[in-house]
Length: 346
Image 1 (spheres, rainbow, N blue to C red):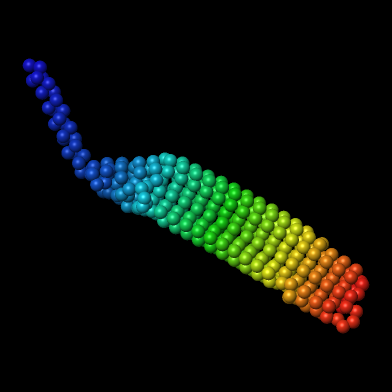
Image 2: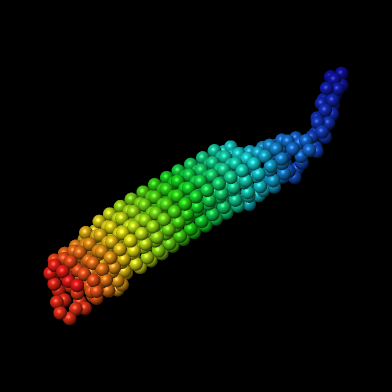
């Protein structure tokens, strides 16, 4: 009698369970490993579904191809990252995809195998293998292997393997392997492997491997491997491998491998291949093989080329004087007579 009662209770339960599984079988597939509650392809998906329009919840993505709506994950996707999120990518604590277009937020971070376009906030960082475009903010850093364009804020550093452009604020450093353009501010350094175009302000150093067009300001040094057109302000030194056209103000020294044109003031010394403008260096001024035009005021002025302008100082020397020297001792090496004169030579 006991066996008959047990059979009568268990058998209906098995039947109900089987019926329930048959009911869910169209929704749960082994390939997708997901539970999809959809109406006309729109709705809720729980698990690693391939394509969803609506809300998709998953631990870690592997098979995702496209989400139009909200994709919420616990961790970043398996490598290689696949799929596109058009809408919102949420990470609790992290999320990633191949492409994210729209809004990305992660308690730890937001990442993309290729591009993020839109707005992204990562508690630790935001990164992309290729490009970042839009508003990007990382508690520690923001970076991309390609270009970064837009408004970028980072607690430590912001960088791009390609170009960096827009408004960039970083607690320590900001830079790019290529060109940098826009307004870039960093607590320690701002740098560009290529050209810099805009305003760069850094606590220690700001510079470019190529040309600079704009303004560089730093607490210690500013410089460029190529030409500078604009303004360089530095607490210690400013220089360029090529020409400088504009204004340089430095606490100790400034120099150019080409021609310095404009207003150039240094706390001690200035040197260049040539100079054309107003040069003020209390300690030492030197021209190497080129020419001097305009006015140079320094305790010691050495023009190892052609002086066509005016030098004022304690000791003035010119290999080829075609201008005027005013000082305690004035030496014009090209003159046949009166090579060295006090007060004035011409």
